[in-house]
Length: 394
Image 1 (tube, helix red, strand yellow):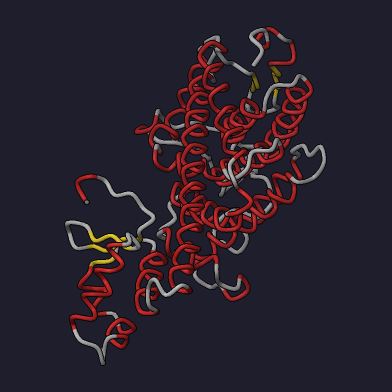
Image 2 (cartoon, rainbow, N blue to C red):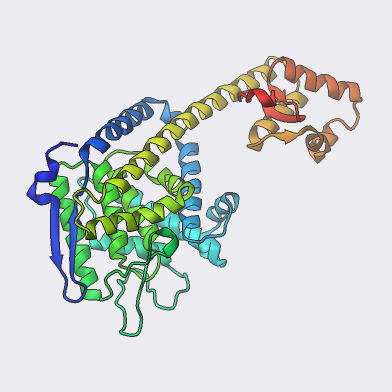
């Protein structure tokens, strides 16, 4: 980020609304606090891009989508577990009847919109796109006032407030439809100006997220739309997987996430010179953590691919027998450690050894352990041989 960007005239845009008073879009950043983080995120992203992504892209994308939808849905009160989220996404959308499953399926539809939009040449956000994302997210979800894709326009007897005292206080966003439309138009126009001034996406994306939430243009789904909007801007600039993985960081730091919207708003109201620094810094810390986690996951998935290949080779060369191959493959695919007693009670396992002695069973397991194709820890849990246990579990 250029250190002189704060002084450029285009960095702030003040809008006078008809009924909600003035609203100012501004960079409001302290470059010295962000420059090192920007460099670290950029460096981490380049290292991540250089990793063997193509070999594991399909599996990594599926994992990130499930994790992200679970995260962004949970932030807004969704009750599905991560596993239940995965199962919901495997359903035929036309057959979904459960509301919680519908929330997850809708988010997947919004993610697909985001991916397709970001793939377009020279894509820029506009109000139509924002409304399409909102329509996808809130389609067929019950709400007293919300209409998918339609901006909020409060009646005189209905007042919208955002936030709570536990997270910095309640905020009254613009209430009237014309003001909301005016501010959304200004937001995308301001973003285009920042883009022309070559403000990096790592700055533009969180600022769009921040100001979108302050406008709060819809009755329902604003948080989910804001996070998808942020992710789409990053995807359009070449960031892969990390934009949606950011939702898990927000969930893990949910109190700070909610509080920062009020912190930045109050700083701006006091005319503080750099009111948005805290939110952008928080965002960058999340991106750095997310990219590093994804990099580690790629390495882990590659290790699993190599391990699977070694398992097949051991079976084909008769270094291990078919029973040992079945055990090692089952443990690898379990996704978590399996208690040895539970493994031995599994129907497929008992059937395999039904006509064999306990000595054969013990010998098969010992052979797998000797070749480190499975690991049995101190708690008698069985792990795949491709993982590294912490010392206290070995």
